[in-house]
Image (tube, rainbow, N blue to C red):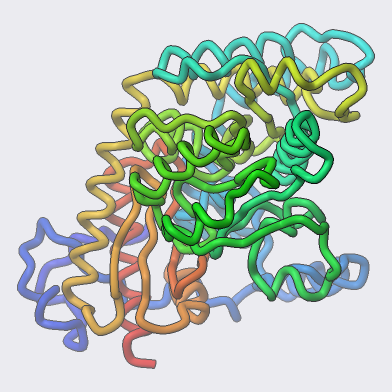
Length: 448
């Protein structure tokens, strides 16, 4: 274990701003020292990375470390260096790494049946759809009716877009437009990418799917003008994740819901990142009173890292989809569904959700201490629950390496933002230690 962050004041590096120095020992103290240098990895690891790179399509910019195992909020590389994981596999491992119950379910089910196809029922897929609907209703979401199980978030969004197109054609052949929003992220496959307004992602693959209309996020007037009688669906993240951790305004979502009702348009909430407890509610849209979707998509934490996604629909949408309208080879397989059943049962318990809220409040408070000490570097700390964005005053890409070299994993987002999205089980001790490492990286970042 690394030294405690609660260093005595006399040991604090003199270069740290006075705001942090004057804090008592109960406050966060930055870890300035580099403890996990990227350039200190064994030659055997470098050789392995170079060998694998020969055979791997170059779609990711990755450091020369190899992660091998984890436990809770900690993850380890091939040199057994311990990193605090404030990414949770990009908001995936809600229950932490190597969760014993998840491991047991995987072991038991892998010894029974991994795959049987959707030509037949299996004992877990139907139970999972029932659980998702009933737990959503129990949390106040009486709109929920039916579920389609997929393999990932982008697949869930693709299915939702298909459902919206079929919905529109009930009314007219040209009711096919999809309204989406700036700074959104819905996935990398062609339909989801067409709803992801980011030239970096879109331009290399143009022309995209026609019929997508992009409106400014949180702009009521322009959005109302975009939703017309030709619109079949509106897809939106109630709280944007990759776009920079930006919650929608309540007035904005309310206006969209009303306009969708007026134009017979389906409202799709993409809750792949903000759903399933991440924001301190079962669903992110539940932070907004009396605003519900017709379709909701989910994935990331659904099976704690085992690939799975889902589309939840209202009754009118579920009844619209008929035999052969959609399908999947692997979606709802007994292995993934068994794990998801276990995960959903645990992360939707009221006491679990309440703990996410408490942990999020503490973590944001710790991060705001760092903001107060470095106001010229950190513009804002925002978010709900454990979906937190720390907006910097400059491009934070170099900051990721600075944090990693202090044993902390973070991930960037849009609008010069660093996402802080740890496992939902994070302890106060790990939160404090992680922010201490974060603060040390901010100190270095502020000088460059």
